[in-house]
Length: 285
Ligand code: GUN
Image 1 (tube, rainbow, N blue to C red):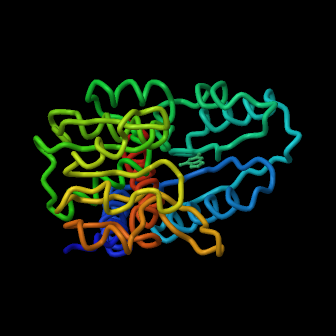
Image 2: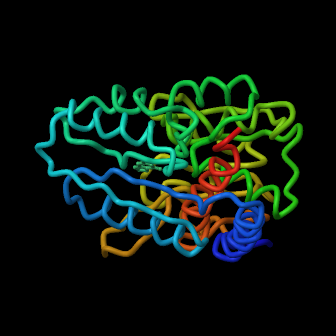
């Protein structure tokens, strides 16, 4: 039984990034720089952005946080995005989601220069991913892919079932896993309207739960020896952090599993930092 350690993997990736930064600096390039736009004061978004900034600072990057009040207009945000697109000192930037209802997330995302879209949300990056071209990939699915690779978990020809069809996790995860040069797996996405969801999950060699429901995946949905990847970050009835997988129940059936916390969530900010150093490396090409 393997417990997939996201914290240890993140530490390893951070070391690799530090080496890359040293190489950039000794080649006379500037320090990588991530900017983040944060609108309003939602506690969850504040924490996420703070962790992203800290991860970048830990890797020796420059980071800038640009804040707006909740009543900011879409035009003001679009102007800020344009400024960051044109700022040669900024290698990559993110606009933390969700945005207030009066602002179109799609319009803002599409305004970001795809070469600086280190979140991988721009339709050009999403499209490039779907046809196997180099691009920025959303951090959570990319982090899962890194975990599978670094734990030498074979994916080629395996049946991968993904629970959840979000644009940020489910769909890009499917693109990574289906690509011949990448996951090379057989992929099924199941969702809230799937018939026989349990049976579909039980067919998985690799089961990825990304639906956002506490302890949704139970042992009766898991094939003996399956690899279990838990993307969930939920609070249970007692307010305790838990995943989409009932860990205690599933543990005896699985051959490998990601814990919550300390699994998938632990690598995502590091993947973002990896994207920023890649952007800095390409900056003056
Ligand atoms: N909101 C939830 N996850 C994310 C993310 O990965 N990037 C951004 N920009 N917003 C988010």
